[in-house]
Image (cartoon, rainbow, N blue to C red):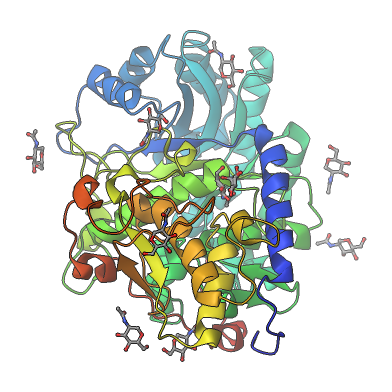
Length: 501
Ligand SMILES: *[C@@H]1O[C@H](CO)[C@@H](O)[C@H](O)[C@H]1NC(C)=O
Ligand SMILES: *[C@@H]1O[C@H](CO)[C@@H](O)[C@H](O)[C@H]1NC(C)=O
Ligand SMILES: *[C@@H]1O[C@H](CO)[C@@H](O)[C@H](O)[C@H]1NC(C)=O
Ligand SMILES: *[C@@H]1O[C@H](CO)[C@@H](O)[C@H](O)[C@H]1NC(C)=O
Ligand SMILES: *[C@@H]1O[C@H](CO)[C@@H](O)[C@H](O)[C@H]1NC(C)=O
Ligand SMILES: *[C@@H]1O[C@H](CO)[C@@H](O)[C@H](O)[C@H]1NC(C)=O
Ligand SMILES: *[C@@H]1O[C@H](CO)[C@@H](O)[C@H](O)[C@H]1NC(C)=O
Ligand SMILES: *[C@@H]1O[C@H](CO)[C@@H](O)[C@H](O)[C@H]1NC(C)=O
Ligand SMILES: *[C@@H]1O[C@H](CO)[C@@H](O)[C@H](O)[C@H]1NC(C)=O
Ligand SMILES: *[C@@H]1O[C@H](CO)[C@@H](O)[C@H](O)[C@H]1NC(C)=O
Ligand SMILES: *[C@@H]1O[C@H](CO)[C@@H](O)[C@H](O)[C@H]1NC(C)=O
């Protein structure tokens, strides 16, 4: 589709990409966070103080509790960790039916722990309208009663109140521009949004691309669900807004924004109260595995901490609670439901998720010194061109050195230029699952292509023979395996027709 462009080595778009990078640096100041969800359906839940030790070790600064367990609230005191407490669904009826019960709830579960414990949010119920519809009528009264009680306790500026919703509340979530809330709940949603608008609270969304991917039954590529951005030709387009989506998470959040907009509410931010990926499933749940869970959660953290927002709301960053700290073996449903945790209860990691400052480390990987990801000179020029566009665009490779006037610019040598971009992408992303593949147009080499002042990442300064010492032998297989790069070029055409999620 881009093939018509003239044989212009440096895509015009490159300038746009660089400009965009600059804008991101400026706008990133607003600071979205990634917190973690701690469920209670765990048979051998560690003690509150052990849980807090784990949070501290992982440098987790925001935690969502599903209830208001008093021992947890005590353990979280004076830690600096921000806490979201929950009114569990089984307490909702009482709180929503009685103003005094709501006041009592605030006093016993919130006011009693502030300021030592930094409670900043109350999540009232969870997916109430879709899981316990018979309690729908008390949802907004519960929010209002709790808010009055906060006001009375003079805590209304410290603590905000909202209620998490499932994606199932949204009809026609794809394309996002057509999304609306299920009209069965129009009147309640309208009151709920009015409440959020009045109190300056966020819309809470449980956004789970895992379910979107599984329910899509093959319509959505796994890469799309895992934030492994697609080739530009297969990015998923929203035909009404002309916005392009490189990942399902953004599409889900935009579906929530658009559903609110359809009810004339435009200023309410979205907060994602649960998002993650199961690491184990039954035989018929092949997407639930460690590789995918690691990729999803790593990319989610990076995306949230590092991104500028969604395509429709580029200025609104979306704080997100990772789902979840421990797998909840007491949850019902398929095997995957019991295996979303990132930690075992003995405090060892299920997989090596670098929760800490993963977003800050988009730098050269020391493990790859002396190894280079270069363009396959036998690949066709048009295929190399496509891959180059991808690397410098969605792949976020640093392509400034191959611009005119820069050291690696070669107007007549697409193999050299593409090699630079492929190698830059690979070195920066390999630790988080990036591969040297580029639709079969790239390959690993131990020959340093650096020349003059054009230095490739991974260069040891030495050249050709005798520089291999810094890197161990690496089998070609391990590079191919990470990503089944079956870019689906026909997606743009296919997806607008599909009203899924
Ligand atoms: C609680 O968290 C808020 C929001 O980050 C912060 O402004 C405040 O200083 C924190 N309070 C305490 C006591 O740590
Ligand atoms: C809307 O919600 C109602 C009640 O839960 C349900 O029966 C209906 O299937 C939902 N509609 C859509 C489009 O999801
Ligand atoms: C939401 O609140 C803003 C002020 O904060 C107000 O201007 C706007 O009209 C409100 N929107 C609705 C739909 O009530
Ligand atoms: C939103 O505003 C438009 C224009 O004022 C109005 O026609 C429409 O009925 C409103 N929609 C809702 C759901 O209130
Ligand atoms: C994330 O940050 C890195 C380094 O600051 C930057 O190169 C990259 O483009 C950013 N990605 C996004 C999606 O903002
Ligand atoms: C922690 O528990 C997991 C799962 O039960 C087990 O595989 C692992 O070996 C344990 N680690 C330690 C250090 O005991
Ligand atoms: C990120 O880089 C810093 C120093 O640059 C290092 O201390 C830290 O361990 C790195 N974090 C990860 C997750 O690699
Ligand atoms: C390079 O591309 C050619 C043609 O597509 C292919 O036959 C060959 O296997 C590739 N080489 C490598 C090392 O991937
Ligand atoms: C991109 O590479 C150039 C050198 O080619 C360097 O000056 C610049 O700092 C790099 N930008 C980023 C965001 O890494
Ligand atoms: C490395 O060797 C290649 C040829 O093998 C040469 O083209 C290149 O200039 C050399 N790079 C350096 C930094 O000496
Ligand atoms: C990937 O390569 C195949 C041929 O090897 C080609 O048909 C396809 O269009 C390429 N896809 C993309 C998105 O570049």
